[in-house]
Image (cartoon, rainbow, N blue to C red; front, side, top):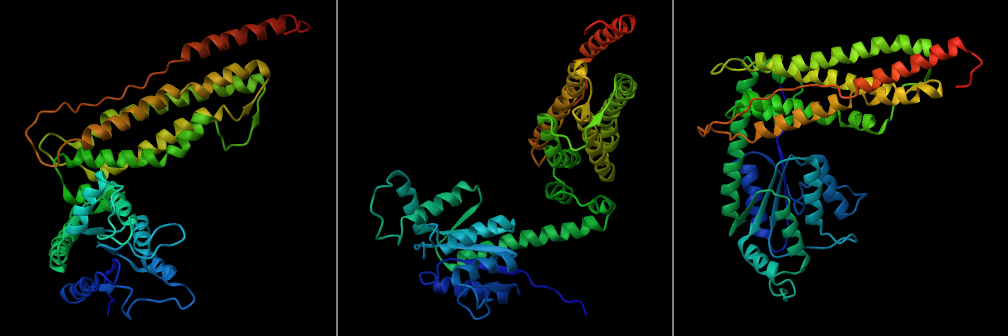
Length: 396
């Protein structure tokens, strides 16, 4: 028999002023939905006998909460040494977990908050137990999360019922997707944004799916991008004499040009094949392939430049090594601009077809800007070498 783990809904609020509301919500969670309700005043709440009340509540959020319901009334509650209440801290811990959070604010408090915003020096002691409560509400609004107002527990229950029905519907879509031709793409450990797009299938979903994949790979590679920007290399330092350096150089220049060619083909041609013809569905598996190949090629171009930071040669070659290190800089800048521009423009397209014509053509052009300088420097060094061979005793 398969054991099914019930979702745990952590209800966070001050207890005494919202006692009946909390009881009603607990009954709703357990009896209407069959979920596990976690409220600190009930004996079902997991208690660590070796920890204090505050630590136990925060640990419960960290360890058990799958869904977090925050209910804010007229009390801020007990304040810790750091100046925040337990309810405030519970919210911060839930936010750090990236779990679904539903915020409910009493209409009375919301009205007082709107007055407080323009009259912060006014005495509100008859309406709230601590003026920090308004700061907490301000923090909630600043989070850009959706905030529901309520008069009674019934308002909260109706809202949660609608919201959880939406989650259930998304779950059904996920089952449908994983049972369809897209299941191979979904097995590739997709980032959350890309997974949501392929499940919900908004307007222009193929382009949005690919944009999300490319942007995710780009974001992952930012550490490598910074390494290149600041010249931090991981390879051991290699000593090379002039002959070794010259022999190595031809192969390395050929390599970076081929990498640039491959990336151009990937982002100009292969993308079009993955997107398919107008009116035909795109190929999600091929889009995953594009994002992975992009990551490999981009990383190799970054590593190519850093390779010349790890070479130690005679002082007369230092300028050449600097030029080679900076050789792919324009390529990298063009790649950065393409990915960010592609993502921003595609994600700005509405989720429904609004019948507005938009120019969404993209093209990546990878140009080299300091190739002439490298050629001139090689010519200069070759001249010095010839001068040395003709007169070995001459000073450099």
